Length: 345
Ligand SMILES: NC(=O)C1=CN([C@@H]2O[C@H](COP(=O)(O)OP(=O)(O)OC[C@H]3O[C@@H](n4cnc5c(N)ncnc54)[C@H](OP(=O)(O)O)[C@@H]3O)[C@@H](O)[C@H]2O)C=CC1
Ligand SMILES: CC(=O)N[C@@H](CCC(=O)OP(=O)(O)O)C(=O)O
Image 1: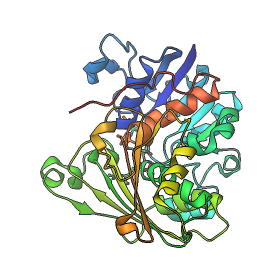
Image 2 (image 1 turned 30 degrees about the vertical axis):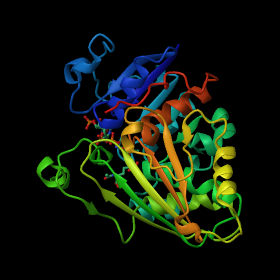
Image 3 (image 1 turned 45 degrees about the vertical axis):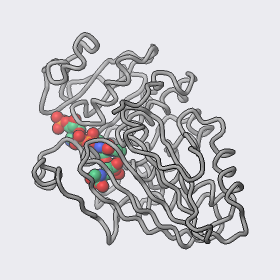
């Protein structure tokens, strides 16, 4: 059994890790931290876990994380970088759901997150945990930088087009919508029920921290300079993400060939569903599951290709993706513990 620690077990991605790992056949939950809920049984806070998780939360400084085989950080940016060096030195694998190790360029990270990086020596060894685009590296990794939720949709949607060289890398547009759980479990005016439940708005339009992360990763797939415009929106739902991606075609290519690019790219992927050309994927078809669905469109057979991508931000966009990485890092079947079908309606 793999002994698992979770730092930040009370947050949304933390409890999602608990939901997935409590029924994972090879995972043994060993330590779950919370600064605020030290000593409280996990199932008292989350009764959905009654009979499944019999641990109590412990304060991070009391939890002996070094006894774990792997520690997930489901914490704000800046927490994992403080503890990862010691854990890695003691042979514990680390999977960070925050951004501490996602951007290789320290200066870009510090400018984007306005945090001084305290473990820059680990940036090079960290492996970006987007399995479909980085599987072999993840298998060998000790330190995973789990991708952001929006970047997962943008990369899986744009990558096949960039790899095939059929769109203008300098003209990528992503119009993305997230459910409110994407903002985490915290008290903040903008995510109160009466503020967010019957309304719809864009945010971060002049610059969101996921743009440098996504651009740097997409740059791996083309020699042309990537230029991405990314506009996130907050939608009145709890879970779910819908990204509408626009690319300008630069090659003469048929709709069938476009569709085939995606079908070939994801033919053997258990967690990417390429729907028939012209489909309209719905976020609810991914709710609670690790599946990401996408569909290709080409309005009026013109020179714009549109890729619609949906996922559950807390599963494929965060904790499910992290467990997918864990499975690979420990030589387990990639889909172990992740085969839940989405909730409908
Ligand atoms: N929500 C989402 O859809 C996604 C989130 N992410 C990323 O995952 C990470 C976690 O997100 P989310 O679960 O939404 O966040 P939440 O705000 O819901 O939870 C944060 C957790 O971290 C703990 N925590 C906060 N500060 C510290 C600290 N200094 N040291 C130790 N523990 C701390 C909190 O518990 P306590 O205060 O009791 O210690 C809490 O359990 C973030 O970096 C986020 O950006 C990534 C993809 C998607
Ligand atoms: C709705 C909402 O607020 N979403 C978050 C995205 C959270 C996330 O996945 O990103 P990181 O891990 O990079 O923080 C936001 O836009 O900040």
